[in-house]
Length: 320
Image (cartoon, rainbow, N blue to C red; front, side, top):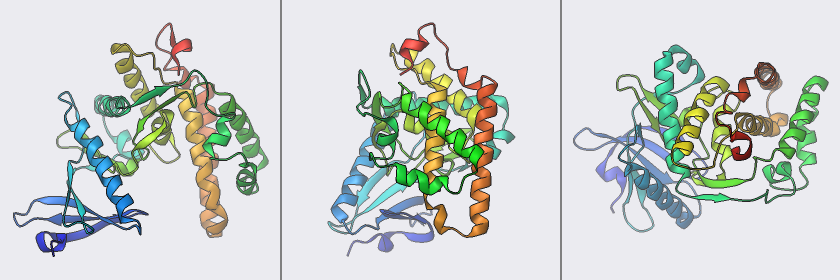
């Protein structure tokens, strides 16, 4: 039987999720690759996800001006037991602390590469609406109209001050005219784990395209601003570069940094939904981190940081 174990030497398991398990492997010549195998009961669905991932990355790989690295992949093996073989993207996780160790020039270069990646990915599919498809941004975010129960389960763990801050954010998020206006092809998992920086070659790599799908265009920017990710200052650099690319190519799409941040806070808040199930000590740590995260937002908002992306005279009408 044509299995990957017959062709490649397993070095180590890289990780396992709801749909796939990934391994670092070597071929007979000592070349490193990544193999993804099905971890789902529905094999055909997994195979379709892989084909979608291959299609997206192949289109991005064809961009001659590309300044970032992405894995090139193909399905191998027999029908019913295929695996996805991908090139290995070298580099270390681009954490917030790692960014702070880099020069301003390197940070700007990374921001430009990430903005280019997002622009080229999003451009594969764009759908603009004259108004929100949903009666409520919040209801759409929680995928239902009965989100109050989920909200209250988290609220009971928050201090009154943090509850007040979240009430303000919920109201602002619900009224935000930018949210829900544009759908595009999104990566949907742009977190520090999937952003690798090769310090030797000064090259940014983006991995894990398994969640690529149509989504609100703000979702990708919000993931960069989520609690524990890359931080507001760096993400605003990315947004500025992204808006320049949109403007250069005659698009009326303009990402508003404050909208992205509100979306990020909603994502960070929602991540607390399982807080009832964690140990008391871990619960205290998570709640403390969330409180610090909200304080940082309020400080940055007061300083006017989120106005940094109002670049053009037409930014108010184009801030979709």
